[in-house]
Image 1 (cartoon, rainbow, N blue to C red):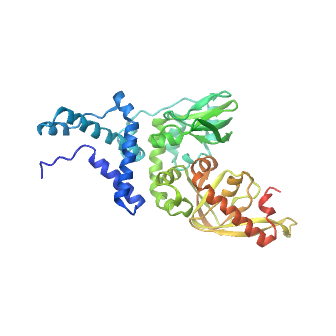
Image 2 (spheres, rainbow, N blue to C red; image 1 turned 135 degrees about the vertical axis):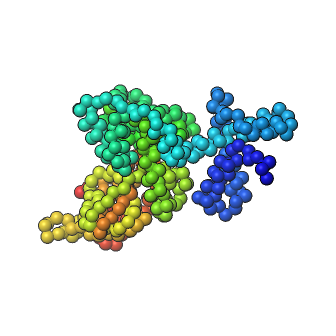
Image 3 (cartoon, rainbow, N blue to C red; image 1 turned 90 degrees about the vertical axis):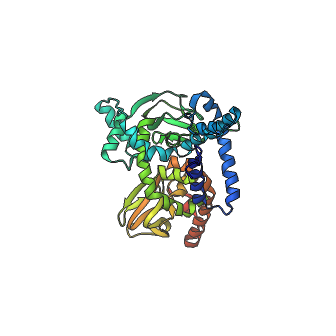
Length: 400
């Protein structure tokens, strides 16, 4: 069998297909294959322009074999057109895995470390801006130090475009100050899908997945940003996220709320979540506070309590009444994010609790497909309140 030659790209082609089959478990393998390879062909056609600009992979050794079989020159050209883009397509599709497991260790770790000198005052401001960034939460001290060394300050003016939809990703940005609109253009219509107000971060998805920018970010005031170049981001952040994926991937797949998402969408959630641990009795969120995060329970139990307007405690304050218990795989904190109101209830750890936490910006970007499910739960909360208090006013006016 030594005379049989495996065509270039075949292994990657079949590996990609097999991974998708194992992930999605389609009932009909043939129909799934037709759909999968049709999408692959369409994606290859979209990258043909880039290929024409000199981005082809080197001519494979299999061409020599086909020449020995005396195939015509035109047939060889057809084979090259078919074969050469395949590795390119798949290297882009699995770019995150490739960057985080092999190239990161073998190539990018050998790159010189990027260092932008900073004054003590700048370093302090940078640390303050980054202290709540979830992407940095799982970094060890050495990794975080390298990230902070590599970050640079960028001052922006009103109406300045920080990033533009469709552009290649170059930097990840952390907001120190300023307000920014998130604009998305679809079918020649541009609309605002959210805002950043003196906090948050953006630009990570294009760097993680080698995809064009998904939105335009425009400054609506003067502001200051801290940028991190793509090489450092991929070498440290993406590599660290690979470890996090191993920890959280199977758990995220088991969360009922997220089952409606595509595999790629769930993986993006894994990449932006952080883990927080709470002790027995510790308050996780407080009724009336501004909402900034969404929580999924990884382990333990959480009690959801609301201040009653009809019951008072011995201290002459409103008594907190338990309205729900949440367990592993369930979520909370979404209500205030969906309604854009203050927290409608408080949440307390019952025993030791681990939660996966997503900030509000990632919530808005990534959980759009789940929004209908979460809105249906609002009706459920209202029903619970009506049963207990005869009114849902506690939910409508959580800040009072």
